[in-house]
Amino acid sequence: MEEKKGKNIGFNIIKNDPMDGHKGFGKGVLTLDNVSPVIIDVDADEAAVEVGAMHARSAVEKGIKFLPDRNEVPDAKLYWVVWVTIDRKEEGPYYAGVTACEMTVNREIRRGYKSLPEHVNRLDKSIKRHIIVDHMDEKSKKILADFLKSHDPGMWERSEEKLKTDLSVE
Image 1 (cartoon, one colour):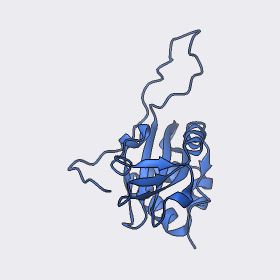
Image 2 (cartoon, one colour):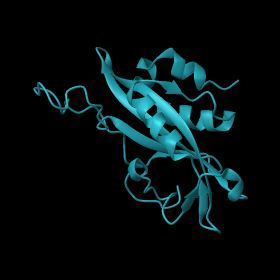
Image 3 (cartoon, one colour):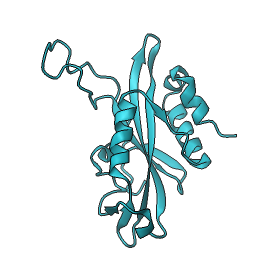
C-alpha cells in the first residue's frame, strides 16, 4: 500500500471464545477477534491485511480528512476496505464473512470520501457471516479473489459458494 513494512501480516485466525464460561453479562456479544480488514489498492493491483483500518488508522487513511460527500473529493484514488471474518468448520477455517466498502482518497488535498455508517454496518454484516461483494468493480473483485486464494487456498476452498460466485470475473 502507501507505506511498505518488512513483515507480512496475516489474518486474525480464530481465537477462543472470550465469552466462554460466562453465564450472564456479555453473553452473545459479537467479538472482533476473528475479523481482519483488507485494503485493496485498485490502481496498484494489490490487497493487504491492514490492521490499522480496524480503527481508521491504516497507512492510506492517515493524514486524510474524510468527508461524507464524494463530490467534494475530486480526482480521488479508489480503495476498498474489505472486512474478512474467519470461522471454523469441521474441515478447518474458512472465509465466513466478507463485506466490502468503498473509500476514495486524494493525497494532494488530504481529503477522502467514505461513509462511516456503511463501514460500521458492513463490519457488523461480516461478523454475522454475510457476503457482500457483488457491488465491487470487476478489477477489484479479481484482486480480492486472488488475494484470498493465495493467502490460504484451503480457506478459500472451504468457503461458501456465494463468495466464490460473487467474486468470479467473466
